[in-house]
Length: 151
Image 1: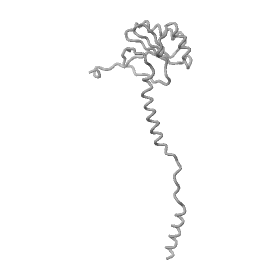
Image 2: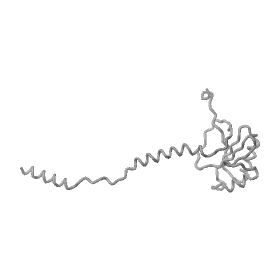
Image 3: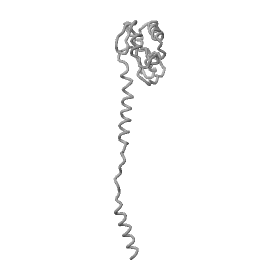
């Protein structure tokens, strides 16, 4: 009978120590939502960089990774030059690039030339940009599809 008294005493002590509710925040749903948003922005961000339609030449080179949004200079087949989506004269291109560039001369500039534009004209524009002191200039091409993908 003494054993029965001891077990009830321990049981009484346990009933006083109630289980406390957990006070931690569950961050798993928050992390899931953030990852989905990250993926959505990673997919849509490259589509928002340039809006001037240009028929780019095809190459097999891999695309470059982008850390910041680059400035884009586009040359259309009719000879017009665009800075981002705004048409500019060739003489006004360098002053506008200097005014826009947020990183100084380290700003990345992509030159996009239509396939039918004279190669000399594309190089002339690149030489203007390079002579102004910009060092990160790149040519943009479209990815060439293999013969198997075309069929």
